[in-house]
Image 1 (cartoon, rainbow, N blue to C red):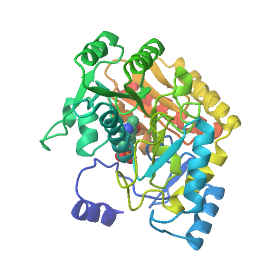
Image 2: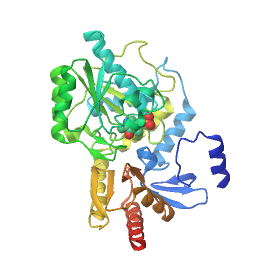
Image 3: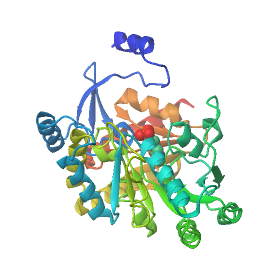
Image 4: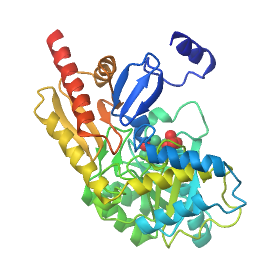
Length: 395
Ligand SMILES: *Cc1c(COP(=O)(O)O)cnc(C)c1O
């Protein structure tokens, strides 16, 4: 254990503040560390292990694909990739997909598409993308630019130009930027994840959709965190009854393998043309086969369970005297504590007692596997409540 931590500190760029746990395996929503200690995992690798650790069907599909075809370039057709695209399109009503390897890349692809759509139709100079204050869109230089938080706009100058930030709910702010001309897209998260599990207002989203429609501005939904069943609908846009021109997916799509997807509607499906975009690894057959299994498992029944389990968690917590509020939808939840209770401290104490949670800004955040059992939820919530009691007793 110590040598893992020592070697990690020595040989891996120190960009993460890791918890002092080395995870070596897991099953369902339960992770196992190098000392064989078990943890109920309410984080699922930041919403990635949508089916939990090493789910049987997923493992079988990935293993079988690894034995059949590990990789070929995008200069050839593959069955898993086209099957994934077809399933995604039929399921969501989108027309075409582009596969990459991460959320940031999926968003880069969306931004490139929006700028090219505008360039093809209106020529140069109509390239501004409006994003929201407190958003998170990724870590590449361009997606950092898109991210509406000043803390991310440091060191790496010059950042990509052409981004304007407006506060969630500020319809007038959006109209004012649009009125200057030059806007090609508005990009947003329906529930800001990294920003603190903050859902958008329905009326605001309806206005955004309308402004986009009226001005031929593309509506880009970053569903990297909210997509693929996380909120109890396949896409979070369904809660808001809107159909963005482009939707990006990533985290939960591969069930643990790296994938990004950018989905295009009729308007945007043919914007990217031969040689205008590409990737070596994106759409890899093993990764796509993992995603195909995830999509098979996320049926209407599972989505209903996601909703029910989210409500169940809220119910277990609503009477706690230490909790101020709970935000989010489905199994994407943020817990705001009362008074001086720090989410970071709660999370680190929960680890000691065998439960893994995340933080998001000042909140504790939960993104458990979509198929987590009620027993697993009870165990994790029990640990959380006991930690809150402990903290309170020590005061
Ligand atoms: C995680 C996340 C990203 C970035 O995804 P990576 O796979 O880390 O590049 C982008 N947007 C949202 C909303 C995210 O939650």
